[in-house]
Length: 142
Image (cartoon, rainbow, N blue to C red):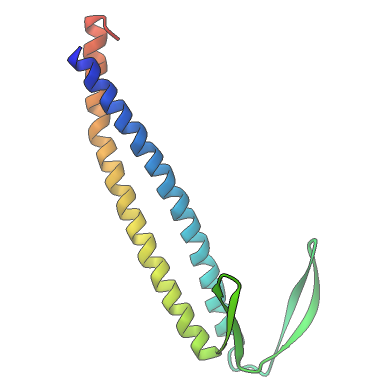
């Protein structure tokens, strides 16, 4: 019976690690999406910086757009979160964007490292579970 209990314990641990792994993957996907948005913002700021006017498409909704001209007043309105936004110069916006990008990359690195630890633990526990299962099957207990 001791092997049976140990197997159940390992299977329970594997289930917990599987749930954690899925949570980490969801967080990684969210951070990667945010990072992609930051990279687009960074590129857009580079593209329009220093130009007097820029032509663009402005979304109207329902997949419809209108041509518009942006008159560069050297200001960017940036969200701080929770519905709060501030006006920044293009240089300040670039600095803020670079900081946000670095923070997201650091977060992503941490999430990948944590996910790798979970993967390593699962890789260690899975063979143990398989061995116990085979042993119990050979004994006719599973």
